[in-house]
Length: 111
Length: 120
Image 1 (cartoon, chains in turn yellow, blue):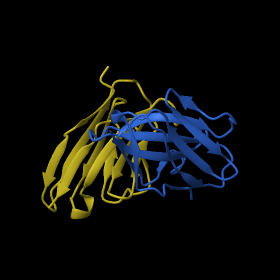
Image 2 (tube, each protein chain N blue to C red; image 1 turned 180 degrees about the vertical axis):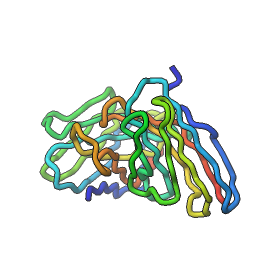
Image 3 (cartoon, chains in turn red, brown; image 1 turned 135 degrees about the horizontal axis):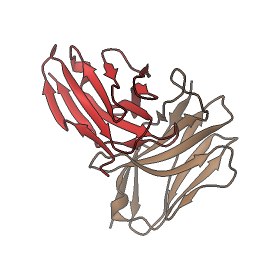
Image 4 (cartoon, rainbow over the protein chains, first blue to last red; image 1 turned 120 degrees about the vertical axis):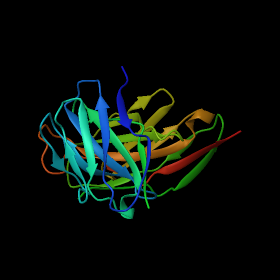
């Protein structure tokens, strides 16, 4: 039981490049979330999903897209990376809406 | 909108001593959940303790306990017998209670965190 895993752990992008972050969970959780963590700002919700095939916007969705084609995977895409998207990205999942289990994070730097 | 405030950017405690981390929140809801998460240098977010707002009894988990004051909208974390492994960032978080997810109702609202140092 690996819990929540994230790929990759680190990435450096140039402005305008695109990439996809992968989150996978093996706990059969319905709910999945993407957060970003910036210094001094705590974690902020980007997008979330309440089940396979569903997605919804969170607090800071601009510049990101997501997909949940399979229940166990939640992908976060950056179509045209900007320096403002330099951050640490966390994926989380939960069986109920209340208790969320987090992945180890992806550190993304956009130059 | 809900907000969570952690007014202590950094705290320090000696090993084996007790420390209390503060958290206040603002909400118009009457039913909700409050959480404390720990983030060690590994960056992994670890759930420390959870409190349901409808419960008057303060939650406890081994050396960790909370002081939940609903009227004051205060939710402090007490760590007893501090250990070197307790050194980390601690985040207070809030979530509305409810069975339906709509808009941003599903989100956890986090405070900005308190960095706890544990000294010998």
